Image (cartoon, protein in one colour):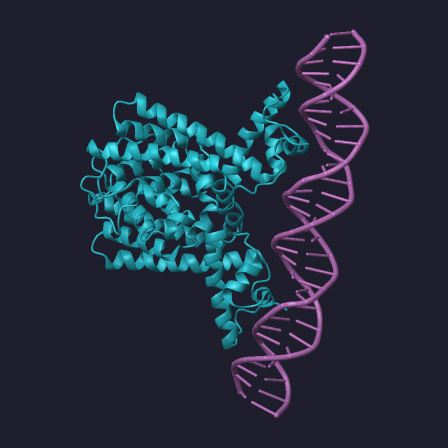
Length: 210
Length: 210
DNA sequence: GAGTATGCGGAGGATTACCTTCCGCTTCTC
DNA sequence: GAGAAGCGGAAGGTAATCCTCCGCATACTC
């Protein structure tokens, strides 16, 4: 009963698979990576049986969601770098994009359970690495442009970034534009010239790797 | 077998009670308000029986932890306002204090489950209100001093504040000073003159009340 | 349009995690 | 040192979740 990826899925199966991934992304972001499988199935408009047929266990689902999310983020990162006139603009666009999607990236980086599943998977681990490289490029470039304070590293940006990913408290979430305001305020913190002296040392790209 | 608050506790019981509250604060912050009671008991160095004797159910424990945390925060807020030369300094001190304690305040404000327990309790609800009033005072004062940008409201500060409360991903948490750097960067975002234009409208003190 | 393989749904047994009680033993207090 | 107050943790009860399984439905093939 192995799932052969070479064999093309029937049209309805394909559709259901996509819906499951999309639903899982949303649910994982809202409820964390051990949300009930039934919730995910319901959100996807399928039965649990369908979910389990395609993703034999939770780990598989998490991995596939991660691959999907990393892929989207990476595409946007590349587009930002290529299409925006400056690294700073690329950084702003990229961070804004992620926010808008409520990207489940943070799952991959934050949650201990999900993190283990993903770290043990060469494909997702490589995705993560490449994504961080692109972010590093944007940050260093923006610093060279004089748009970002030089006493921070890529890790600092990633850290703020990860904080932004997290769902806001329900009450604040209802307020129009709350997360965009957060994002803008944080970006202004990154731009500050001269900023308040920061404690410790810059958190670099390397700090985020194993 | 009602717990009579008027009757003074035996010394060891008193000590255990304090340890339980402290442990619960830590555990709640790390794991959320439905962490297993046994984890809390273990962290406090007592048996579950002891925990239940003092706090008949989870709701009671949450409420008492909330009262404790609000009380601490309020004390520090008052001290900050009185002892610091400016409202800005008070704000910085207050936010720094909360971070240092990994204040479980956010539990009270964020989590739906815990929030319900607390909102239905007049005592904790009043605490929350007073605390927000003090924060409002600091923010408006700092704006009058020209230290904080005027296109934000107290609610915006609380929002950033709440984001800071959340536990950082394990990897970042190991890096010395990570959360202090976050805090400083955010504060610089609040100070930005002139800042990037913000979307929507300022989030006010009133927005945070019911 | 008939036949067949593939896919679907969701009830339900198994399992696990957690809550809470209870009672024999321990520790404080006077 | 006596008795009240407190303690621990085993264990029964409960609820939630996992995952399988199989009769029915749907999409593809000729």
